[in-house]
Image (cartoon, rainbow, N blue to C red):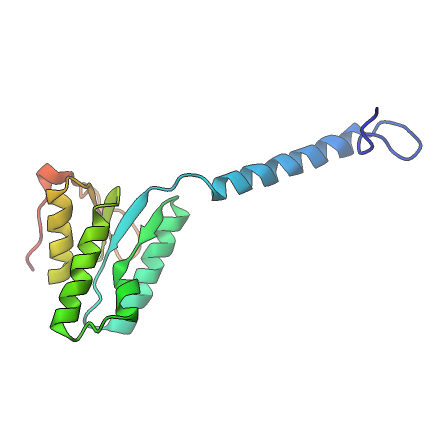
Length: 159
C-alpha cells in the first residue's frame, strides 16, 4: 500500500513535498515534547515591600525569565498576597513561613536585584541551611559574575 501523501493524484512520487511535511511534523512533535519536558523548580527571591506595584511587575518579569531559561519558577510573594495581608505582621509571618516550606522543594534560589530585604535574607539563609544553590541576577536579568554560591560560600550584603 502506497502512502497517499508521497504520491500525487496521478501516482507519481513527490518526495520533496513528502519530506517537507515529515520535517514539519517532527518539529511539531519536538516542540510539544519540549513543553512537557522536565523543568527544575527555582525559587524567585525578590522584594515585595516598598514599591509594591513595581516589585510585583518585576517578580512577574523574573518568573517569565525563569520559564524562558527552561525552569519552573516559584514566586510565593506573587501568590500569598492574594489571600494574606502583608501589612498584618502575623499574616506576613505565615506567608514567609509557607514560602520557606516551598523553598525546600526547589533546586535553586534565584535572587534578583541589588537590594536584599529582611524577607529575602531569611530565604537566602534557609537555602544555605538546606544546601540549595543560590544564584544572583541583576534587575536586567543578567547573572552576576562570581555570584553563584553553594551553601558553603554564601555571603549576604547587609546594606
